Amino acid sequence: MAYSNQDRSSSAARRATVFLILGVIIGLLSPRLLAQIGIATSAACNRNVQQINQAIERWHFEKGTWPDAGLSDIGTDPRYFPEGLPRCPVNGCPYLTDPATHRVVPHDHANQGGRRRW
Image (cartoon, rainbow, N blue to C red; front, side):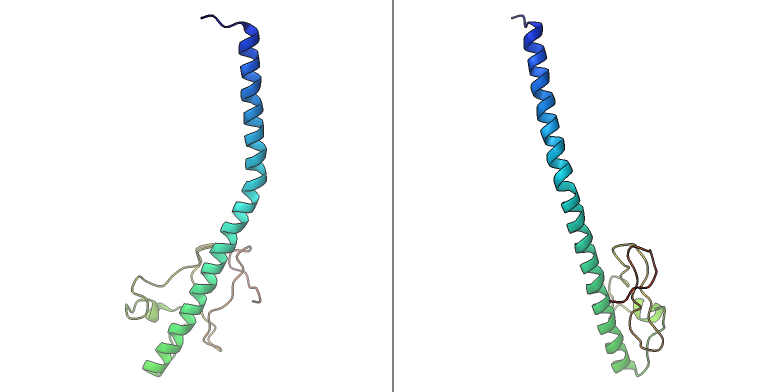
């Protein structure tokens, strides 16, 4: 069966219309999806900070001293972090503690290591 040029051009126009509609839908939804991913990784970072701060308290209670500011001692102890000390899931930076407060130092996800008040 032979197709005329008019049939071919109309099916090409239909395909182009479908691709255009799909492109608009993807363009509208992708920023929302990316924002949700960012929110989820920031929440995971906050959970990591809470877990590390709890482990620091436990370390101090059990050993009578505070862990190293770089967390090298507590991070290698499998009783505290069996899978190793977590890193920030947003930018991969290691967590550090403030020697005065013995709490994880807040960091800025947008600035890759700058400081931010939480």
